[in-house]
Image (tube, rainbow, N blue to C red; front, side, top):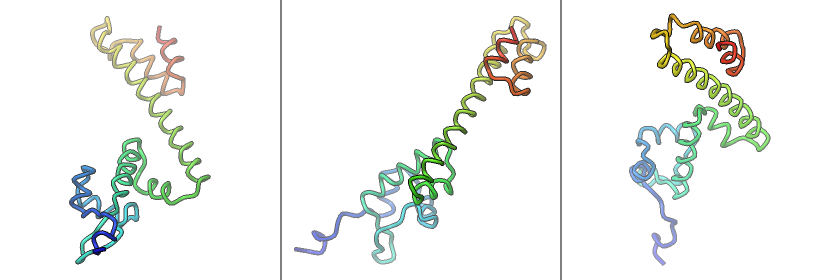
Length: 146
């Protein structure tokens, strides 16, 4: 059996970059942070296991939903209970973000269709914004604006 038959398939950093769409500079940074480590070095070059494609995909997903690289590192290396707490915290953040987006969409949609032709002169537009500033829910702000 030759050495290549005994060694599991590995990817160069360029191949990992090509398969994931992540620049090699980012992959090197992920290595520095301990997020995706090469399994070996051949002639000073990083070699990654096939599973690194999955690992990089997970990092991209977590980044997309708002996790910082530090949070991703804690998530990947933490204990189960810590991960559950991080999930709960991120869900709360996303819920708040979703609410802000709904308020913005409602106010902007009204501003676009406003019969006053200028949203800055529209009491309903301002009622939505001011209600939210006072901590009212979107529904409360919107109903008071009617």
